[in-house]
Length: 310
Image 1 (cartoon, rainbow, N blue to C red):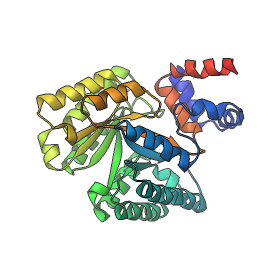
Image 2: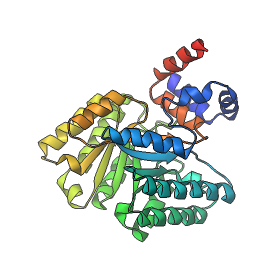
Image 3: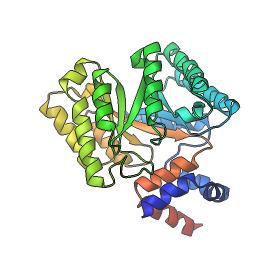
Image 4: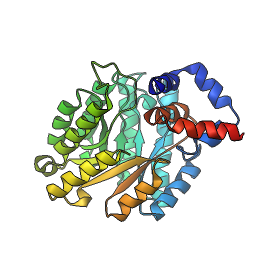
């Protein structure tokens, strides 16, 4: 019930206005968000790199409805990729297609993505296309394939959500195509006919999808997986699969969100695995913040304790 409420609030305009107007709100979200500026995001990235952690930077935003706003978001990513190159941090970028104009038109979105991927290729960097709600799944995969065919497939990747019933079919195709995927559980409100409603079902599907990717045919095609999870059972299953199949640690990586289980992140690095931290920044942090609370409602306790302190 708490998860459903938080996911509802993530899209509720009134709740967003009220929460973002609170004087303490910006300080509270610092647990999950690097800051509102690119300078703050780069500083956090440098600190994480110093601990042996890789980083993916995400300039927060989604669902823009004008070409001007899509162009503004595109420029933010061009600036981000330039800044990564200049500062020489070990980081790539993640973005949402709705932030780049998918709700305006596919052509606007494609034009903006081409600008971003050209910049990424210029710097020898990588861009991950995030996955949004099921209203966008098919279009996201179609546009990903269009862009992958236009650019080096090592230049662009996509996200797959384990809670979706369709994902096994998608993963089998993407593995055969040599796609670089980020495998996560999923964080949107979806009906049971489209998404597994029970955690044990999502967990079982996560392991199934991970094992498809950590298989020799997928590896031979060039496929690469970022196992994005904070769940020790999913981490252990990934490690066990890789060990049993004699897959080198450099052929995959683990991924976690900034502010969640930092000690566990460091432990995984110390064990010789690659660990990438997903670091969001920007002023449009509200939907992201609420979805993080929904993924782990216990984080609400953290929020309430800080409210009481004020």
